[in-house]
Length: 338
Image 1 (cartoon, rainbow, N blue to C red):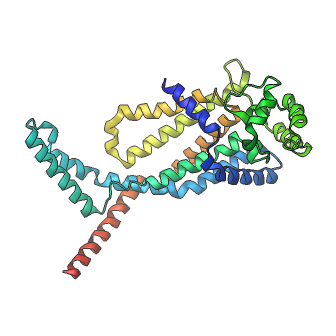
Image 2: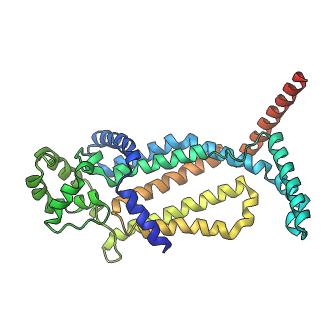
């Protein structure tokens, strides 16, 4: 049930989100420029595009790591307060409520002393990253519109009606499906919708389609177990996603040693997303799986760079120094007011 729900959500995303269309357009223009620079080499352009987007997101990833360092630094103090009151061991409801209130008061005093707001955990950068990465879907799922400039979204019903006359069945990944069998659909599209699919657009789509081969692999096809060597794409999705999860988990444990106590839940999370991406890679074209694979590889490299040059222990130490300076500054300000 969980996998089916996620798959339906993924298909919902593949139909396009109105508020993301400006990003789809922007990334489509960027991809167009890269295709021009690299002589229509789709896969090289996609690799460079992925690297560039990760570079743009790097400051936000660094911000998240610093936030985690701040949380990790005060976590032992919070645990000490919790151990002091040991609320769960108190059987009397009134005494437990009283102890819980004192515990919360002491934790709030700790937050005030440390200048830490638990409600401000760096959600802003995380939300920006999610929206940004969802925007990249535009160039992966909707290339005919946002890279090749055909107004698909404004004419979906008309196009579907024309395609259904030649046996087209929409599986949720509309534009990728058109690319898969464009030779089959191009004549009827050109004849029935000549203003949309002009001779120039037809030529542009054919040229784009011709560059969707990686060696002998047709990357518009959906991988299957019996589909030959193209099965390597889902396998590499699984391996690279697992690598990214493992590296992320190891870095998180260095940032927050207390998280090692949650071993079983961490292992579950480490396995869940790679297995999910492996499953979904059999539901989408190999080009989408290729993007996920490259994105995972770039994420691993980025995480290793961050661990090398911005190690968690140094972040925690730097946070302690900055907090001490800030706290002394606040204390001096209070003394002057008095």
